[in-house]
Image (cartoon, rainbow, N blue to C red; front, side, top):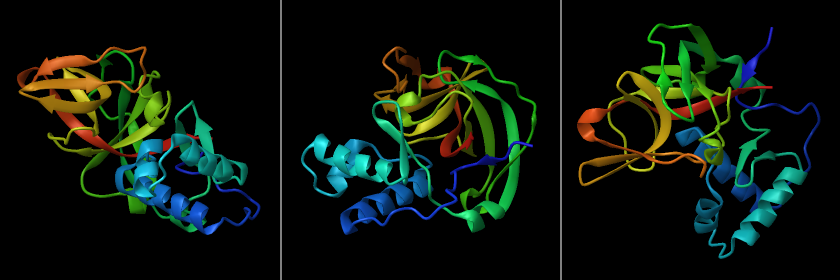
Length: 214
């Protein structure tokens, strides 16, 4: 049976971090736990007052070399060692619905396909999971086949990643609203933004976590 986990846990002890590396690593973990995905290079630079992106990249390369993170594409990365075995052992089941595209909109199945076990510290309120299809959110570290965990809600703040439903079709995109016009933006330049009025779509939930099969 394949086990779905949020992080892979190395079987050997990882090298020690410098104070600066540990601070950045702790910030990455905190951000993932709060919103479900890692901070951007710009966000890390702002948090630690690192002026250049190369400076941030050097720290990330050091964390990757020591086995704490892994690069996903050019800008995104994922944590390899984070919550530990104890956190993985305590789980809660949430509904797993049909596949949601991360490219063009695709009909989302309304029925539940099954249940998905998630770490209990990720569980909060009414949640559901969807399987990502496509690569339009790769810039946010969300890959084809990932299980995304969403909190059921009908509103979102600008910049949050949501499951938007348009004419019965669901898509995973970053949400922006200005002057009554909603822009659903991909994290891959190959895909154009989708613009709709507030009455032409609804938000089914916002992303709060992500699971990946290893």
